[in-house]
Image (cartoon, rainbow, N blue to C red):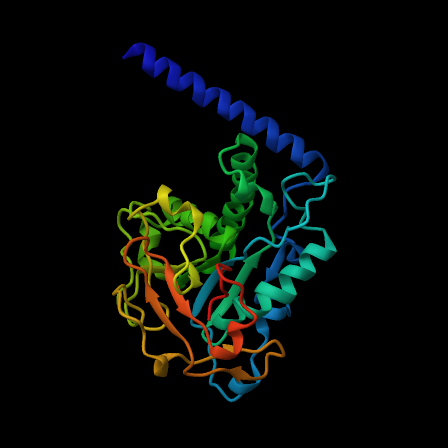
Length: 316
């Protein structure tokens, strides 16, 4: 027993030293964000940004800001840049433009009818780490990205929350960090009382991810989490053998966890690229696939020719 404990502590110490060395090396040329500086935020109530945009068909909607949403954007550091390594710089104009014109405009903006939106820039991990998750460097890159997200959230709590209700929303890499954030700040902690909902999209949510935060099974449930990974109907991802029955998924059309296909009449439509039209209303059906708990989507017929078999679909 003493040998095992000693070995475990040794491994933990070595990992800690490796992590500190990695973080120090990255920070030399890629300093950590300063979240008192508005340049470190992709979306914030004190700046005008793409999350403030409203689709043309919603311009007459009544709006308020009774809730805060902390939005963690997905990977936009796609092309590897040797000068950054595995973690992007938040000062890279091209990466920031991709973030702002894509995920902030088309994803974060969905909340601005009822929320103040806070979306930090962070030294996100490069896309390649998700193709080699077993490598130590990949985990170190994700750890560094999470430390930025955690720092941003703590700064938000200290300076802007003031006891307001909170929504956590994320996509893809953002969901990797959001799950950790919920575990550290909300799950069984006093802050859980302020949680309206956590929208954890585009990544696996394991069955044991949370001890006290329940999955949402109705459209009006609060204090819960919901999430899904969407694929074309009939497609199984290659990693299915590694996660049999160890995932959770909610149908975003019906807001439940049943395995029934959602009626097309409930599907509100897709926001077009010009952000002014609602396309293909009542044209899509979804199902929580029973074995893997992924979301199968039957896309609109007009889009089928544009979607390759097996390609992960946008959230629609």
